[in-house]
Image 1 (cartoon, rainbow, N blue to C red):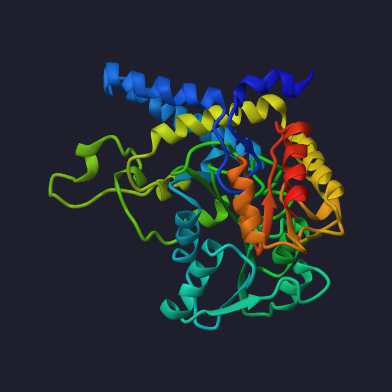
Image 2 (cartoon, rainbow, N blue to C red; image 1 turned 90 degrees about the vertical axis):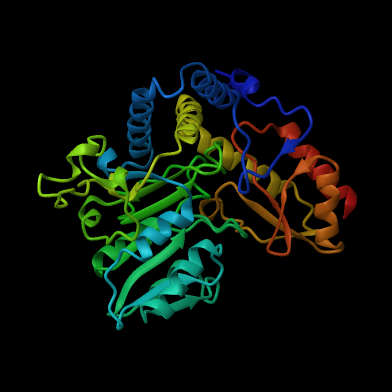
Length: 385
């Protein structure tokens, strides 16, 4: 099957070459239709069919659990964004003032400031490590730990350089040393396989609006079952409760509280869910599953390699590793003889949607991008520089 021809109608980009999936990805047409159908149903029926909304949310948790190889969908919560999920973790753990957290200096702000905030609120030591101070980032993180390290936080793929962390190595180390392992997977989910079991991941968070090809405002949060009851809640609501739709049963005859938190990850969903986002993400994941994540990963890797191999090395320096096993779908480069911000502005003006990150140009093609798309970007890069 020619996958590109089969799914070409899903991405009718007539005006732009979209190479910024590490920023905000476009919606497939099936996702657009899912949003339209949901909105039309609401216009015609209001909330009369709302039982279907809860059913679709449950289905989505199951699809996500399968995507990351969680034990079951009870370990999945549907939240607003990655930052909310990371805050749920950071302010749910029972810290003591001798604990420390190890995190990379080059992390996206969402995966730094939430941990750094704990230094002021919980007196936890935050060890911010230069990921490139030694031969490998994994080694830099591991060497920063000691007997008081409670958690290591990493992104599965670094947003600026595209470096792909060896999650299996880090996860196994954490498992062997009784350290919690937290992964921001926003730059890999939808572009590469990820297995929370083999990588011994305790917590995982990811927005839907990048490689998962869905809207902003909907995110997944994975919490290993053994940690669900241990995380303290900092926000409460009706959705967090067992039998949450039985509103009249929350008080007994003496008007005493008798509500009980859900035993699964649903306790982290404190209020009404983003059902529009849920329908959209469900549709986008159906496309990725239809193609198959192994095939998606193969094509993403091929596209990234094509860009890396065809950049003029006399005019560009790669920020992304040359080793294909150490990168995902991001290729970042610096023009050696041109102003990189001006180059970025030029690319955008020519309808090549990329990003300016780490002082250079970041290209992040998805599986559906064609060689023609990539050549268009390369031609302009070389023309300007």
